[in-house]
Image 1: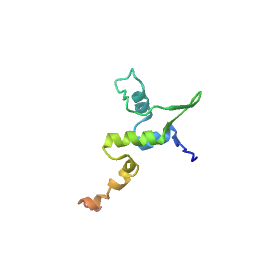
Image 2: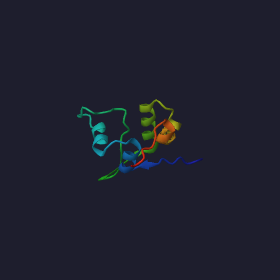
Image 3: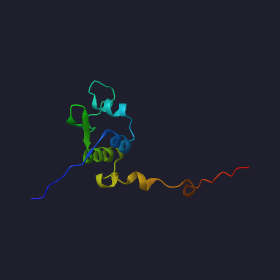
Image 4: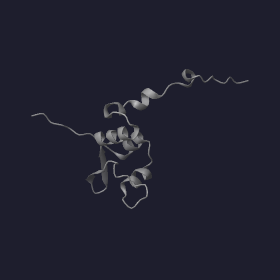
Length: 95
């Protein structure tokens, strides 16, 4: 019988992955907020003052927002960014 381990992400990692601010994340979790998003992953309570989010849930949410398959949402951002010179921009030279 194989064990399935679930990776949990702390707030700083969720901020880095979603590019949302701390307050935006908590606004999405608050049903009384006008920014409430019922699709945003719920936090997991680790202790009295400690929370985390399931990594798979965060990646699924990102994939649903970007219309990408879940497996490609982990690397989509790094693969889409190209250097400016490859997009036809020229480097400005100093006088």
